[in-house]
Length: 319
Image (cartoon, rainbow, N blue to C red; front, side):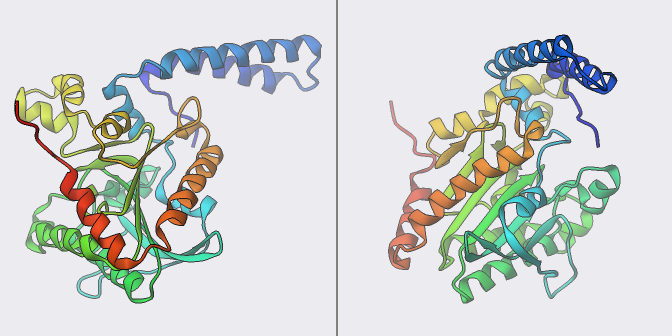
């Protein structure tokens, strides 16, 4: 799949096109061609810095959903070894919107669970656009308990618009499945790290998000509702989505300022979607750092700190 450009990335697209043309049509580039490519690359860096240093919250929301943005399985492939996918909830079926299994990270066995959106239309439909059904959350719950049973650290990656709101999902207990995950993660007797890698939407996201450490990529978002949904409720119009995004304050920078997340993981210039390999290396370093800090903590201490972490959230100061 080729690189897709958002509206505000159009100036970048124009320079990318010129560079690609020079490289494609110059079979034996001479000094002048190489000089022109170097000049354009410097111009590209300058334009990227200007654009990405002044992003609005709505633009970051768009980046969190970017079609080329690395998915959970992209990171699994690049960061972890010997991934063994585990399927099914043992009650109803297997939900492809949530993927999980055992893997190795820096020589240690870990349990991985993450939302998977897919990239092509066919993949997106098969993964239900990353919107899990109850069986997806029950599969995640089963893997959480396995991690606890075998004393393996749990790493979750969040990237979903939200839980699937269809009638069948409600009939099969969507809200209960999410609530059970929240309760389980709050007291799970193993270290937990959660990473928001893209779009973190509502309860569908937080069902994998109760953790000892919460990391968030620079252009990810994490919010109780989408800007479009918020705009439809508050202003009866989806056209107010940019206004809603500003009010929601769901960007990584916002949540870092509010003390909700433990690390804002920087993305390469231009966004994770342009530098997948580099982004994976950056995330691997962050994961290694936090895992090293919590993996040897006594469990009673870890659970107390996890409890206190969430008790501190949402503190209201009286005037």
